Image (tube, rainbow, N blue to C red):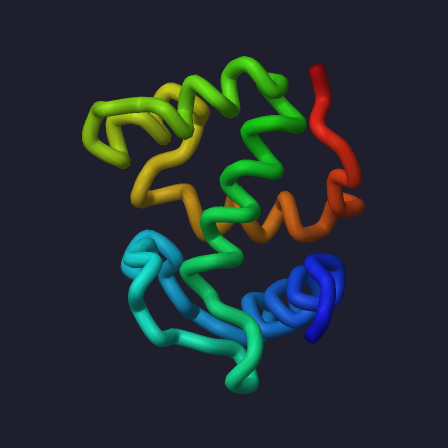
Length: 103
């Protein structure tokens, strides 16, 4: 089993060479994998959490996770839309991974 950093590197490399639109792959039950190991929907969720925590902090991350609103309405509050999610998460992948939750 590989750790998050390993999956993050695989995702970054894959997205650099791909035209995949991440907005189309948010279903956590979708079986879309990089090299049969890295779940793209899982990594999208992880990167959204990482980005939200880094920019807005833990309290806002929990607000996002507990939101009862439609997904895109919730994400828009945190600067993510169907049109920019792929580019924003590619930018997040260029940053070092977050190792802890910001207060």
